[in-house]
Length: 149
Image (cartoon, rainbow, N blue to C red; front, side):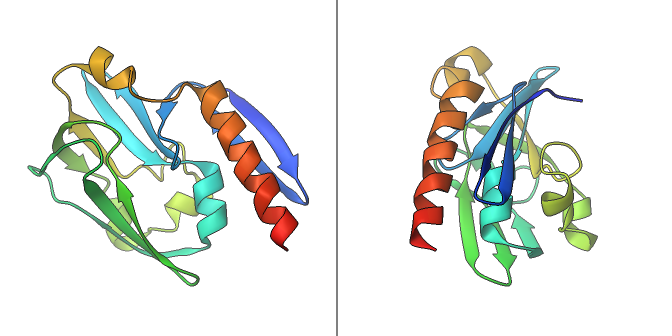
């Protein structure tokens, strides 16, 4: 179970897992035994709404950092998310077919999107935000959005 940085903005509480790295768009990457598991941050899933459908590129797909890896459909929006790293998809979360709401219920564990084979994690990780840096960006975005309400 990861540790979290946590903030409450208005009536919403947002958590950032401290055991992974992030893009500024809120896609996380976590190194696990030579592979990298990716998913969406708590802030992204809350902002997007209830996930009704998740389409992830199939295993075997080669991706550059910034290539589309998944499209998420919610009641509010359809959003494309990009890969945080350069690599090849080796596994897609099977729960996304039958229970994409796992993204909302458990974004850092059961709600992961895919596992990628990455040639050089150290190089890829250096391009990502550490948890504290993403936390600050996310907190700023959350505060900005509540001003619009």
